[in-house]
Image (tube, rainbow, N blue to C red; front, top):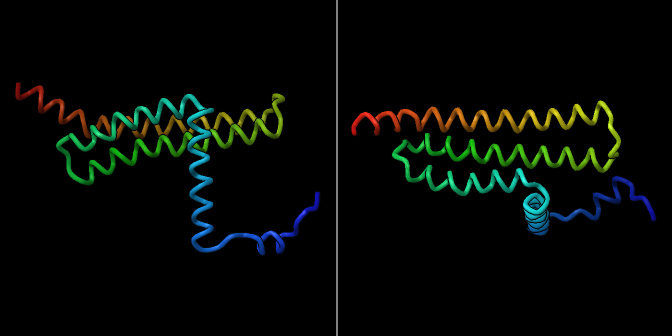
Length: 137
């Protein structure tokens, strides 16, 4: 096996539309892998599939709708990053190590924060709607 220098690697990199095509293919592979390997990603994607239509059915302003959608997408984004961190750590070694634990714990904490942001946004926007609806009954 030959090792390519950085300049040789750059010469073989794709550009333009081909680069975009291969980047899109890699992204698609990432989504498929996350769906297949990560139960938490599957659960959060199902939550997105339920909440996204709800965001369009609620009588909220366009900016509130965007906030609702973005916060759920944020959870998926952070989950993908956390899964990447975990896979990289596991690739390096399955042995217990303090730095590996720290990296995985921080990734998990990031997912927890994203979920908290999502819950606060949905609660802050939806609770007043529910209170108004209950009050008019």
